[in-house]
Amino acid sequence: MAPPPLGLYLRCRAYTVIPYSYRMMQIATWIPKYGLVYSNKDEPFPKKFKKMIDGANLNVATVTFLPHFSMNSTGPIVTVLKMLANKVNFTYTIIPESSYGYLLPNGTWNGLVGLVLRKDADIGLGPLAITYGRSKVIDYTEPILVDYLVIEARRGGIEIDPWSFALPFTASVWASLCATFILAIITAVVFAQGAKEWSSSTALPFNYYRVLMFQDVDDIKLSWWEKMIIGSWMITVLVALESYSGNLMSQLAVRYIAQPYQSLRDVLDDPKIKMMWVSNTFYVQLFKSSTSGILQEVAKSEEYGKMTYVDSNEYFAAMNTLVARGDHVSVNPYLTTRYFLTEGFTDGDVLYLSEKNIFRLKLTRKSNCNILRGPV
Figure (cartoon, helix red, strand yellow):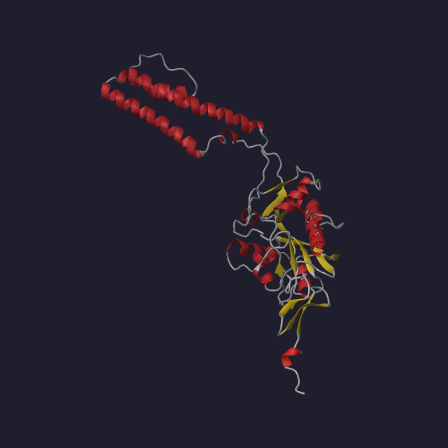
């Protein structure tokens, strides 16, 4: 009896490995008669993080840095983690870390990035910046927040400027007023020369000065063109001096409190002030690797003792000591520094924030408040 055709008994099975699990799941079979037949309703090649069928307990490394994450495991980024855990079906164990991730001279990474890279943690949770160096060793989620750097420093005391009477007008305004005064006199003299009425024009310069001082005009006989010129000058002086008096009153009524540090240049130019940075962050690595410009000057200032580094869990204590006493300024993301002021960690009248992004570069933290994951 001849043996049956080989294809009658030929059968293949397809399996896939469940993410974060050692179990293999059969997803399809194949025989010549029926072809490929799926064994269950799941996708043959499910997305890695769509759903953990067996569930898993993941190690989540994070840095205590308000308002994103606190020591009692609260904060907006923790809410995101809980939502993911519920959606993807996993539990987690928090692993505390003191820094986000910095490429060391020997080529290794520390902080959250190092833990994920070495597989000591499955997820790194925190306000992480997307950088080219980090992207070569770990994967990011989509950005969910954008932040930027500001300077936080101690306010100056109330200052009295003896030249405050000149503050309402800029130099260009004063120059324009003087030029108009001279132009009015020259115009009057030209008209007087044409009309040959020198007797009345001899008192004109003094009349224009009297108008500027809010005095009346000398009682002399004025021609129609003299009245037109002096009248125009009176209107100009009235508008200018009313504006000046109103602005001067505002200047004298409002206290002037100095906020001298609005940029990195302001800080670098003051030999008495130091910068405080959170250690092992993207920004620190950025200016230390810079070869030109203001960021290179920031890196070189460390040689002159103008730099202080603190861990993220020491930040708030350092704000109440180093920055509050006035010999340091903090350079940090806006959300954290603003949270420090609004939540009452210090007297709001003591510190202030710079008005703009101090880098003045297109370096927005596109991944601030991201979750990163390492290779599985």
